[in-house]
Amino acid sequence: MLETTWFILITVLFVGFFFLEGFDFGVGMLTPILGKTDTERRVMINTIGPFWDGNEVWLITAGGAMFAAFPNWYATLFSGFYMALFLMLLALIGRGVAFEFRSKLTNPKWRSTWDWVIFFGSLLPALLWGVALANLMRGVPVDANMNYVGTFWDLISLYSVTAGISIVLLFLLHGALFLSLKTEGVLRERARAVALKIGAWTSAVLLLFVVLSYFETDMFTSKGLSPGTVPVLAGLALLSVHFFIKAGRDGWAFIMTGATIVLSTITVFMLLFPNVMISSLNPEWSLTIYNAASNAYTLKVMTVVACTTIPFVLAYQAWTYWVFRKRVSSTDHLDY
Image (cartoon, rainbow, N blue to C red; front, side, top):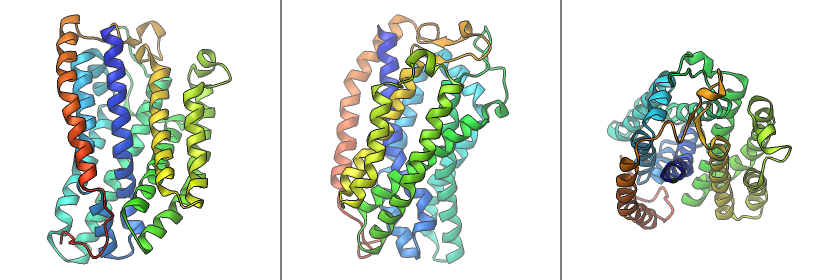
């Protein structure tokens, strides 16, 4: 019972991470492209300025929960995906440094350099998360001792790259709609136009990923021809985005991209359960919530701590979004 509870809690943490970090990854990727002037780029960065570091806490918490609740899962995942996670960490560090250093000098080349660091620091993690999730769904070479026996290149395939590109496009769409809610004037209209263009590509690539999933995973044998209610709702939410943008309902469009991210993440973990890492060498060598979990006492203590602290964390983050809910414009004080 506690193993299932902690699997659900880790799912919730990743759902929160992808929903929240999704839009600031999207804004980061759009910054040097959508912003035509230095002021516009500064405005775009300021829309996520109060949130981006808090959003990354969800990932840290998810990693910590995985380490404590499912240490075997943590060990196999982080050792097997070491190079991918190392590249992701470098990108996130560079992105954080860029946010802080960009405005230290007024030199245009200095600022342009950091803008592109923000771009790649947002693009690479989004791409790698797609690759990682696809490999978790398909399975990776794990032996009888729970050791990953493949290489970094075993993670790269048409299927995983398609997943990475779909995540990048979805985050770009999510970020563009966030900008339409947080900016005004020409920048807002530009963000809405980009969202309309990206929407069709996002739907097409995600559909391709779903089709490939039937060939690359056990989705067909476990779910049949219908993928299930949750992924269908995710697809419908994504398709509705275009109509909400056309109707000028940017808020609803943003909610729908958020729903797509949330429901898609839930789908991945539903397909995994009760596995946490599928062995492509032998299904019996797969890591499950049972053979990868900590002992019952550890899970009980963690449950008490989580139930005590998580409500305060959620309340604080909700308060932060409420305080910084207003639109950002070029007439505001910009951090130069």
